[in-house]
Each structure stands twice: as structure tokens, then as C-alpha cells.
Length: 291
Image 1 (cartoon, rainbow, N blue to C red):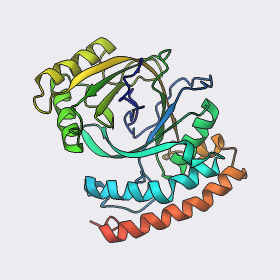
Image 2 (cartoon, one colour):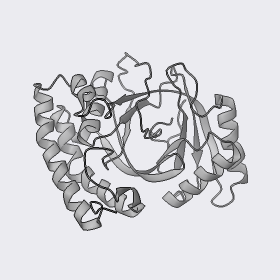
Image 3 (cartoon, helix red, strand yellow):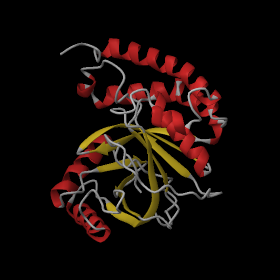
């Protein structure tokens, strides 16, 4: 959603990234180093991609998705973090706008200091419970990465979901390929030039052209007037499950120690709580009604 997205960040760029919440797993080379003292960002959605009969979920409003995500953040996310042996108080999670293929939805961003193995297990746990095709794991301060990014900063308290969507559309109109995905943290909208397994950007743009397109968009955008405040390279990878082939989440389960592992057993219990919340909200919002 995604993610997004680094070089040395200005103080206001806390760790941002959502890199596209993709509808398929994108194989990226895993970084094997555990970077002590460097924060990692996990980017994902709370609304399920598969596994629930929700024919009208696609028509859900942004505000309804935000409200659902806030409930998930309060009631479910801390349980998943605790199941992984992590104190929830050591991580920060927020509901933020996130874009994918020219559409803005509510996303969740979980940030903290975790080593790579722990971060991947937590990402797999979140993806498994929320039935996501992938969760983006990124280190925004690690300039050894090969994924290009740019940060578009808006004046304080002006970057709403509607402004983010407007800039998203304007960027794609400026250069085709910039409408892939973004994430928001505070007053910053972050774009990541995600690559495939061969290192080729899905946008079809090289990093210089990618950043230049965002600079052109910012220069012509009007009020609230944004600027490209930084750009560079980041480390990013997707942890995912191909639900078309692994219909019960086998890819995630393997990462989490197998079906008999203590972690998976804990997650199975939490999945029941999540399913109950989905059912409650789906009934109240009509997401479960046949069209």
C-alpha cells in the first residue's frame, strides 16, 4: 500500500509507507539483516480480501472503512501483536489513507523496532488473520535498499483522504505509472516505485522519471501546495499468501511455524474474534447483502 518509501527523513516523516496493497504476491528478495535501532513499517488493510461473503464491501464508503479499521485496531491488532510475544505498547499503529490503482482506502500502518524475522512473523500473522494477499514490510531509513521512493509533503493539517486522492489522480495524469499506490503519514504522502522479482518497476518508470513526475505534479497542483521533500532508496518486501492456490493460508502458516505451532493456535482463536467483528459490521452496514 503498500510501501513507500527513504533516505534520511525529516523529523516529520515518521515512517511512512503503504506501498500498494496488491492483489497478488510480489516476490521480492528478503533482506536478511536484523537492523537494530532501525524502525520497520508494516502496511496492510483491515477489511478482508477473501474468506468472507461480503458482496457489497466493494461499495463501502471510505468513512465506513475507517470506522471498521479503527475497531480492528482497538480490538484485534493488540491481540495479534501479543500472540507474537511483543508488547503492543512498543509499537505504534495508525489508521491512515492508502491508495492502490487510483483508489483511496483506509489502511493500517504498524511501526516499531523489530528484527527481520520478528517483523516477517508479525506481518504473516496480520495477513493471515485479515485475509490479505500481502503485507508490506519496509525499512524507511535503510538506504541500502533498491526500491525508489519519494515523499510529497503538504502544509500542516491539510492532507485529507480527499486531497490525497486528488494528488494521486493528478500524478497519474502527469505520468502514467504514478497511479500504482501510496501511503499517508501525517502531512506526507509517500510513493514507492515497487519492482518485480527482476528488479523492473511495475510503474514502467525508472526512479528518476518517477520522482520527476511527482515533482511536476506538485508544482502544478495548487492549494494546498505540496512539495517533494525527499527521495531516495528504501528496503521493502512483501510477505504474502496466494489465496487462489493456498486457500487456507498455507503460505502464512508455513512462515508461522506450521499448523500445530503455538503461534498459529493463538491466531486461530483471534481469527474467531475477527470473524465476529466482521459479521457484526457487515450486517450493520449491509456489506453481506447480495446485490
